[in-house]
Image (cartoon, rainbow, N blue to C red; front, side, top):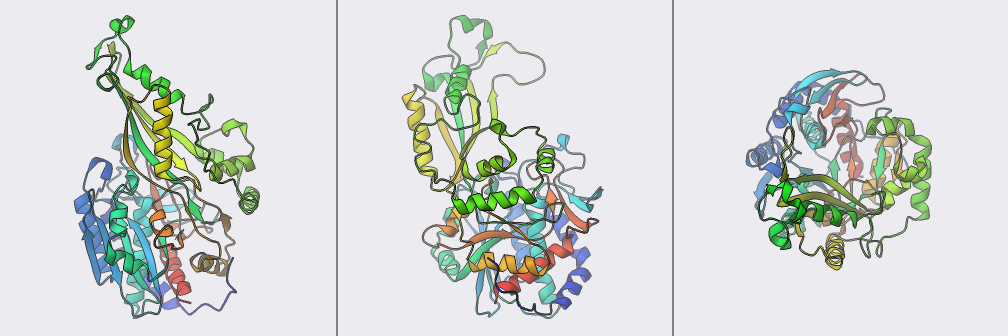
Length: 480
């Protein structure tokens, strides 16, 4: 839990410098958002990587280099401040897709708009996930140097351009000998984030679920039944359907209500929720609003008609099998009477401790083969194991110290339901503490009208300058 609170160093000159440099920092963020970097569609990733490296060098990193992989490149950067301690940073420079037709403000224009209840926000793809918080961290470095100060810790940064496609090649970056050696000197590693809810609440998470992203493909060619090209639907009377073959296979993966995995052996390695985790959830239940959560998610009921506390326990402790999308045949306006030769399901499977990506994928393949669906092609997009970090890790305790000093009593949370490739840091051979930190607020990640608060009208939520200052304070706390 938090360390014994000590008197904070006088950091007022950095607060003033952040305010003085506010406009230039916001312009940097807008420039960054305006550069698309969508790994899934291979749009702007090379240019996005080059811009990211420039931003790092401008912020003071003496070295920032592109690291080639079998996919999109990673980045390795170091900032040697001559300090006794070294801290690791994980960044991503890629973003999700964006369909401009779904947005009220163009996703690549990074417009500054008034958002009721929040103040002035930047709207654009990547605004909060993760370019906004990451740029606020870089603004903190600019302010420290601009005010004539010295960075209190050395920095080792690793970044990727494939986080949004489940990081298929990021281990190739981290496992390079020079990068492993640099990370071994770190006391821990964190990702800049915007963790304030609209009511000012901050959650400190001790880990994240793992994930496996796949495409499950049914085709007449692989099946040996059904057509090898689309044919007229009237022929269904005598021809098998690859689309129905896929639907029937999907039905075997979950219980009848679609809520729980039914893959053979899926729960063999699932670690039961602990008493300590139950206690964390019980406290969170009292401090978080069920009504506000339902409103933000646009739902009326929780799965299995669970109560509020049980739904939160499920969120941290249950593995899932989710259909992201189904594609097959004709999906345009009106009808087109065809029997499609192929159908595809995009699936993500969330993993909890002590599940692994490789074991889960093997269980899925065996389950399908046993039931006569071994012909289905399984195309792995990416994935990784879940992560866990001790509440007593200095990286976590420093977060509590900064937050408590700011008058914020954070919620301690066992793990995020979302995923990131932290296992490359928390697992062998590094075994580093890893987490997320940062004040500020944003929303709409992976959705239309994604935003990040710049000038907050909500007294409980920090704007851009407050977010940057939180990183100054955290770096100084990590130096203690």
